[in-house]
Amino acid sequence: MDKTLWVILTCLQLKLLLAQDDEGYSRTFLTAEENANQTTCRSQALYKVLPEGYDKEMPPLVKGKALSVYVFFWIISVTEINEMTQDFTVDMYFRMHWTDFRITYPACEESSFVILDREQIDQIWVPDIYFIQSKRSNRHEVVRRNAGLKLTRNNEVQFSERLTITKFCAFDFRFFPLDRQACSLAVESYDFSGSEIHVSFKEPGIYLDNSKFKIPQYHLSMVNPHDCSYQYLHEGMYRVNQSCIRADFVFDRQFSYYFIQMYLPSVVPLEDL
Image 1: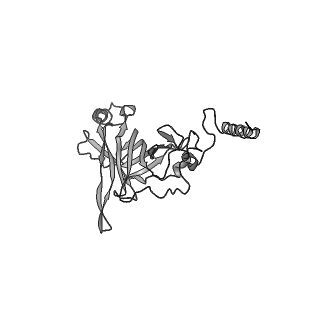
Image 2: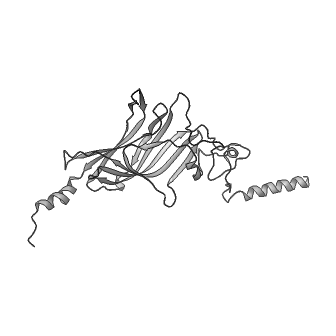
Image 3: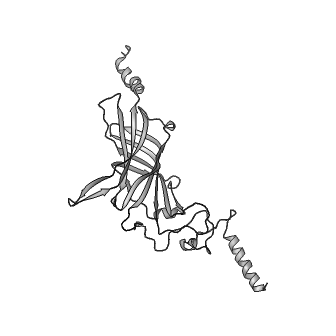
């Protein structure tokens, strides 16, 4: 082999080794264009996939077809039910899936999905989903923002974030203390109608294990997914379809708690002091 060629090949191999860690991953991020090219793509623990000129304000809409946004609620706990302020608080993992045709899956990646660089959470277009009638919505940022992005081979973006939502609930006390309360948690797109963005639950839609948490006075009997899509009159001119989904939380009051904590102290006579 020619000595000059041998030196060049040796330098290239050394450069490649220095660019990889002990697991064989690249030490530096490649651009989206480099990742999309089979020749330049290298295996990485995290990927950048947003091409140059990507506009995060522009949704990946196709003319004449609504973009499907799939939502999943992973309920961690119901932390509070406040009858005085008529609201309840839910701690949850909120997940959304949608397809963005502007993104290209890394050419050298063999797995079914890749984890995206965290910086891209604020650089990628994310559906403008909001919680209807919510009083407070909090993100969790200890130690870092509790959110992540994945990309599948068919260009499906998977977004996940931990949220705490305090939502209005119209309590009905007609059958107190044997009452059952139903509180809903509904979401829809803020800017787009149902003809542009269609929101639906991704199977199974809702997950919770209520054996892992307790609610004073109440028992969470069930959480049911529903479609709450509706029509409204836009500026009094024409009807618009709005895509909406909701989770109905059904709470049954624990009569034993009420009997021991409220009723008995009110009827048992106090001893003379």
